[in-house]
Each structure stands twice: as C-alpha cells, then as structure tokens.
Amino acid sequence: MSFRHEESGTDAAIYRKPLSSEVIADASDLRAHQILKECGFVENSVPPLYVWHELPEGLGVEEEKRRSTRATVLLRAAGFDTELDPSLVSEAAYRAVLTEVRTSRADRSAAATATSPAASTRAPAVPERTVPAASRPSATALPASASRRH
Image 1: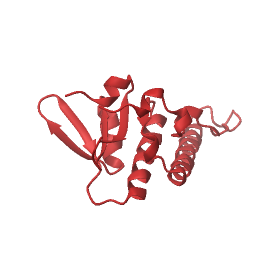
Image 2: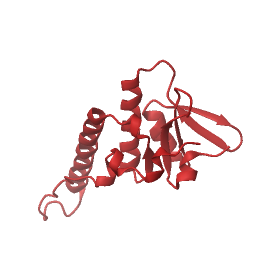
Image 3: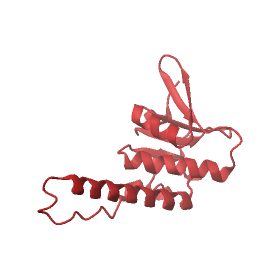
Image 4: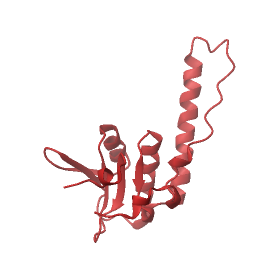
C-alpha cells in the first residue's frame, strides 16, 4: 500500500479515489492527522503502519469540496506542503477559511504583543495581512503531480 503524498513528495494529499466517489486524505504527521479530523475527515487504519482519512459517505459534492478546501488551507497554514485534487477546490470555502486564518493570526499577534513585558514601551504590532500564495488551493498553485492517480 502506498500513499499519494509519498508518491508526490508532499506532506499531505487530498484527492478523490480513482474509480470511486470516496474523498481520501493521507499525511505522515500527527498534527496533520488532527487537522484532517477537525475538518470532518474520518480516520481509518490498517495496523501497524497505515493510517489515512476519508470523508463520510452521503455528503454532497459541495460539502466534500468545502471540507477538502478547508483542510488544505489549514494544513498549508500550519506549514504542511499539501496537494489538493483540483476537482475538490471550493473558491467560497477558500475565501472563508483564509479570512479565518488571517483573523486568527492577527488575534494571536495582538495577544502576544499585549502580554509582552515590552508592550508598554513598543509600538503596537501590525497584524500579518497576507498569507503566502502557496496557501491558495487553486489549480495553478498545485504541483504537476496533482493529476496523477494511484
């Protein structure tokens, strides 16, 4: 058994299983597995080595896209190089989660500044206003291997 993220050289991959309607996500890091669970993916395993996630059956196509896009953006924001099948991209979900990530970063930055001993002597920190282009799960930002299937 091989994982798509290993074949493509990324930290994680989210894709529709060939000849199936299943949406699969695989990753090698425990933090990535946690993000996938938080985005509604269900963990599966074949002990002792294989762990992967998939979306529950019965979701509509738009919900699959929303959850897949959300997971991809959150994984990328956490520093994971993540491949997303272009057929699973939701522009609306992308915009919503990107706003959420930016707000969260600004809140953390403001909280860190407020609790800093030097906060009273420094100018307030400017919240991070941009997220690297690599965070955007668009077809043009995906690696060439995005169209490969196993």
